[in-house]
Length: 609
Image (cartoon, rainbow, N blue to C red; front, side):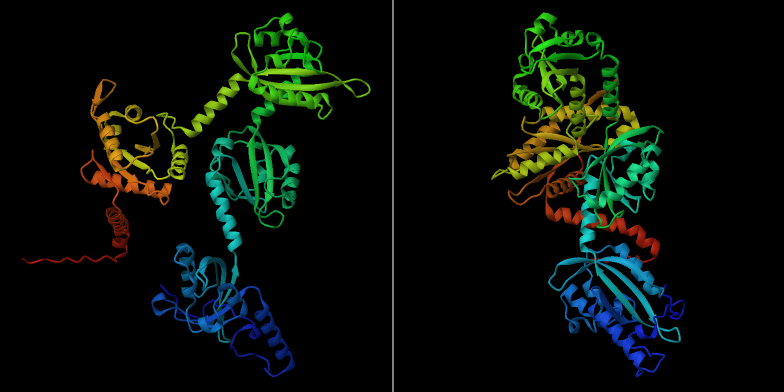
């Protein structure tokens, strides 16, 4: 409801600042003229747009309030000359893509005759879009009656693009990113629960420093303040302990860079969890100190080697690691037991040490066991110098990291595959689809979007564990029906999708038939035979034109068309049918709200024949 009382709590500008308003002092007096000249100079030469409109009308149907004045900055910002906007509504600047929530806030403030600050997406005269921060204030005369609106507009396109870009990074990154403004957390990437146990919403608005261990707070505080002088990619790293939700402390390597142009504002902190690495480093340091005088009994492989790389002394752990005797080891060099593919790199590192370029070095490499199996090694070397500082020999710490490397490989696999079915997940599938579209040439790419029919009934009837077994079996059967060059992935829930390269309409439909045939036999789960069918939507690329998202949406639309035809069907994408389906969904979604608001009307017609 519009507040028609235009005199309620309406702020008044000083007489010299109100356009066309009566001034209290003699307008011909010298002070009044000076103030007027000062005001006009400020408005004329301001970088921000100053725009004055009538107080009414407010509703969009009446066109909105008309513009009475714009300063020169308006032309610089929008491309419109004053005569092209004066007498018209400023709504002509609004982009159709602007945030509807912001528009609703603006309308509510106007209807309440209150000031407002919103961020809108506008369109210049040349059709380009730009973001503005709009501050609008009602102006009242000496009786308190509102006569005008004054709007101050500032171009914030650069900031908004940076914010949108940052949001894209936060949504897509696998690292923990924390965005701060004045020391408080404004945004966190989605991996936060995995690293610190907190959901992003739990941390927003809280001081980041409160998460830091008390012994690290001073260093972190200074580190964040210094972020203003660093850019992303070249900033130094600080290691600090940060609190986990379970009460433990995690070691994080922090890299901070300022994104807002002033210290403390819009600082992004990249956090890498190095807790395990710190733990290993601490354990290694303690071990080295503890067993310095007990070389032969060290729990990890140790050796003294000459500058040429020949073993001079080895311990029992190293011999056991490589399955060789002490005498055999002393007859060999480091390169003799190094994997052929790692020899060149290993030799470069050794030469850097022996020539004095470095005092120590650690790198991952591979050694050869006596039975020719490969052993993953973390090889640490330190230079021992004589009193004159000349290198004499090397102390080598040789640690078996085969299990860790295998674990990292499993983690990499899990990051790109569905944990239930073992199929590629959405990230890996979209990467393969993008690659296929980039390299498709004259050949077409086909997507087959598969949705298990009535899967909820299976879960409700047999339980979710049985449902998981059914999904796993479906995945295996679909995989067995495809070519080696095809990819089947699980997008989530009961949705699977197949990528076929070099596939025309006939091949795509033939593939759909094979997928349906693969599920003709019921799936046996816990003694029950469960019949399963799928609905398949087919979408074919247009070489050089189709994008991954377009194909995915088209195949999804086609799948719903197949379901609408009775399930256990496949359908080829039809844009007209998809558009009609989307319209129906929009009507279905908006109908309950229209009924609640009392805005619905039902019209019927009868055709006489």
